[in-house]
Length: 375
Image (cartoon, rainbow, N blue to C red; front, side, top):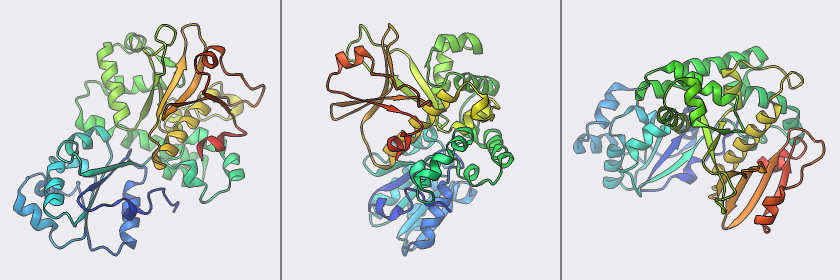
């Protein structure tokens, strides 16, 4: 089993606070939790939101029953906590009355679980996101040379744990199709009023073909056949359910720089390729640049999440077409990155960027040096 970045959950636990682990379905939250519980010396109780009896008890807000449920334990662990109504209130009762008890809750959909734990647990929670396997995690079992050798595999099939461990090309594709059919949009269909699942899938496919490009809500609205407000709502839900990740435009000069549109990337490029049924090799595809950009961006996001980087991420473009793929802003410092899947002549930073942001850095990320960017 590949060791995850959060394998030592004990270091994240604090008395009087709930540790919440978010993430898409099938990224390994349950496996992570169970592996930790196998090694902990704490006296623990593990339950799941799928258990009707536990769901009824913890959604009741009955002080006496909830306190009786948690009494005499050092650790309470709730898997699939988003299935429990009022779970935030129940966990608040536990940590308020038994501050010495440590609590872990996992949830598969950020928008759903956060609504239920956010307000009741204000100041009483620590939140972490678990992504599909990162290059940092895979480096624990492979060296840098071996990771580079597998780059095509990662760009075609992504890095969901079950996909990475599948032994054949057909096995990887089968797992990805199962993820899309059974898990990817389960939370949306289960917890949100989605009038047309077909529209949601159509929207995702359109986003898949526009990876790395600015997205027009009006254009999507016209092509999908629903109003722009609905498109915006669906995109927001897809982001909150860990399917896509948006990137806004950077600007300190509103007259020249584009900020009204957003770019969208898939949290996992394997999901993107499965949605449009494109698993052909590097030699037979015209979207390698977009795939490489998506991969590098999300690996950078994973790196920053696990290293607790609190800067901001953007893209940059001017109305006359000068652009930079990624901009990072941290403590006033600006770093610009351009992703190129080819190692041919390296581009120079755009003139308007260097003129406007003279103290910024600029780096080209390519297949030769990308590991320096994501590790």
